[in-house]
Image (cartoon, rainbow, N blue to C red; front, top):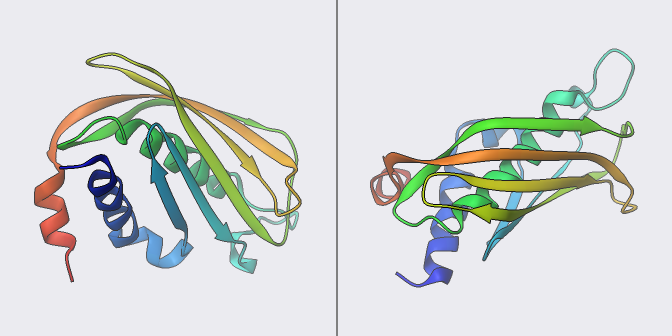
Length: 146
């Protein structure tokens, strides 16, 4: 399988996830990088009228996860740990998280991600460790096929 085919498979699997029917994100995966974006919905807001931290986490983790999985073919990686630093709130517009793989060994991958608003202001940063699993990508891809 070529790298481009692997990246498209990861994108298909991401879009097929049931949770993404609610969030309606978009993803682009490249070699050691991934970008996830979505438009803020009113029901993403907490009581103080800013986007809830769970949405920040989802975007940052997804971007870092797929940046890591871009270098692991055949199986899904799993998030082993993830740290998030909130920098500023946002209430409207479009969000974009960019992830990049920073280190990879046979059993552990480290990736970082940053979250931006539509004016390119940095909202949050994240970093995570990921481990290859035994979950076969091809099997999941066949199950996700329309």
